[in-house]
Image (cartoon, rainbow, N blue to C red; front, side):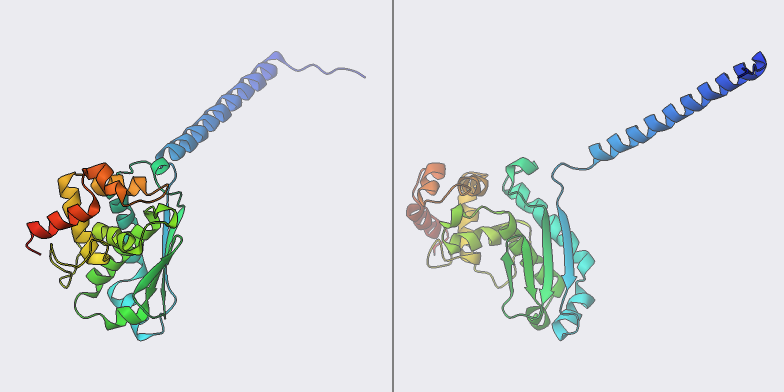
Length: 250
């Protein structure tokens, strides 16, 4: 078979064009790789997603939620409340927190106020429908409380419920969403009475040693003992409660 020869000018042009095409492809590839790397760097490690849905939109309370709160705002509250938890618990990185990938909210036609199961928050549409006053602010406070349940350690199930609820209300308190009907500092019958009573007591303990609640929560990762109070503050919890009551004349 005869071999065909091409003019040298055509050969040189083809090689030059091929080299130019290769250079362009290489540059495009480099740009794509750089953009991918930038995107990866911009995405926070262990990023958490937040979602909200109203499964009771046909009820009076569900309609009120849509009208005065809304799922878009609720998603933002879940994010802001999570950031507040990380700040209170002094957990700046995902490695120091509970391994939570997503926090969800469902507004449902249920009784009560709200409850949290795992990483999911369930808000009562009936409760929303019965709120008097600022609905948005009240729902925000409830969501801060419930979001804390997602992130706090519970002492491997050994901590009493009053303390667990008190820590959740403490986060709500520090975020500025304590409602006017809460007890005042010094009020209450027991340190572990729960909710606002325990939240106020924890606030007192934190005033003795800033970061106390963060230290307490960290200890509760592996279990629970009332002795944690003495280990952190140098006094047992009963003495701290007496000191607290004395300070406020309770």
